[in-house]
Image (cartoon, rainbow, N blue to C red; front, side, top):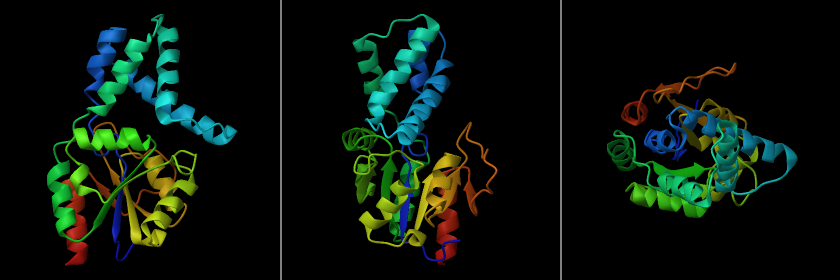
Length: 226
């Protein structure tokens, strides 16, 4: 367990931002909101294949590839306009209701707050600005500088180096079990956020901090410092 964490490193999509509005887009394009889950799985699958084959390309590019494949599976041609519309929707995802108040509490408690995402720097900056969250974060770190995607251990090591802290002085906050495991590989502790539909499904044991929302995370970390 991290005894005196200085930095909280937040995943962005699903952890901070609510992706459920994408269901409206998928319902209109595919006739049902359900394909959004398959699209996201294909997006993550594509990033892992890119890691293993050393074929890094932007996360948004892989997202477009996943959408095209999904269209072929469902017999729906994906035009450039439809792909651009998905990109626009991703840039305007709202924050989960608990996020703003929790970030305020954590910042006031003296934690450094940063984000670490698979998306591009430009996309991440756009998302956080549009969601009104950018003012809380010291840095917006992405995988671009490393050319690999989370959960590759190099990403978390890079983040610690960029922030000037030992990995053990940071906590990775994520609604994805694989993100927590990736951080753990370099000695960074994790906090798993059980958003709706997010369950711990890996054989590794969950981290010491498992919360249902970020307000709960603030409770735990404030108590640790008191």
